[in-house]
Amino acid sequence: MHPHLPPVFDSIHRTSTYAAGHHPVWPYAPLPPGPCWTHATCRCGWAELAESHRDARALARHHRRYAADHPTYLPGSALRIGDRTHQADATGTHVSLAGARHGWALADGIGDSPLAAHAAGSAAATAAYVASDRGAVAGLLAAAGTLAAVLEGDTVMVVAAPRPREHGGGWDIAWVGDCRAYEYDPDAGVLTQLTVDHTEGQQLRDSLAEHYRDRPQDLEQLAARRDNVVTSSVATADHDSLGHIATTGPRRRLLLTSDGVHQLVPHASLIRACRTFSDPAACANRLTLAARYFGGTDNAAAMVIDPVPAPIAAELVP
Image 1 (cartoon, rainbow, N blue to C red):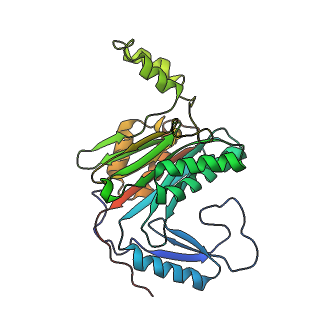
Image 2: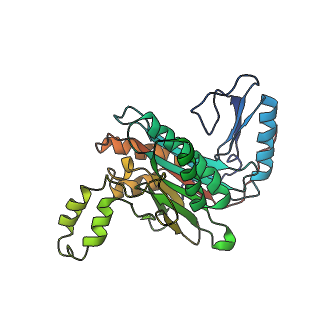
């Protein structure tokens, strides 16, 4: 929980319903003609599609009624295209109807093409959905199966889900490539990188660390030239090639980024944004703006997830 988040929780499960032109999770294809498609969405990230406004409102009432009985998270995300032709970064969020399951993913498509954008969107949506029920590793492997079955594009990605309390709490993180996950501790003001990049540059740092022990700047200069070459991706992911980490203890603010953010924005600036912006969407937006400020031209994506530790009273049903 971010220290600046106001202690008024009764508006966290604030829902909205509105006419739909596309699916709330998968916006790349139009909906078929016929029903009066309507979105139902919530601040916590829950989203569903109904065939009428009445059905959407019924789903929203059900969500508000039961979601308050489960741990809640406030997600915020931001995407910037940079000077690319296509936005090949994507984010995915899945929250079950009753609010008992949560999953998030951030993907960075490889290349600047419609296939890369489609791969990233497909992988993020699939991974978030599966991770909410079966964990981050299962979510990433499910995304790999999706790309292998229907697409020629490829992407790198990081997937996150909360670990059950009986397993120690904390975060469950899986990744391939150079998308990252960080956890911010507001009490200590420390931002900890949870993932290790799967790049040729990072391989050089690991293998030559002892040789360059007295010349770390020379090693960094050498390795930085290969940071843009990833050694794993979603399309080729398996249990042996993906990265996985599980934290324990209280969950704190989680930050997911593509390389368009963390390769440009200094670590101190990442900390400053996490410390300054209590709203997760505002924090994510500031991070992508900072990437442009520091000279970034690549797609940039950031997702911020704030745990809400206290029980919440569900919004009154109109």
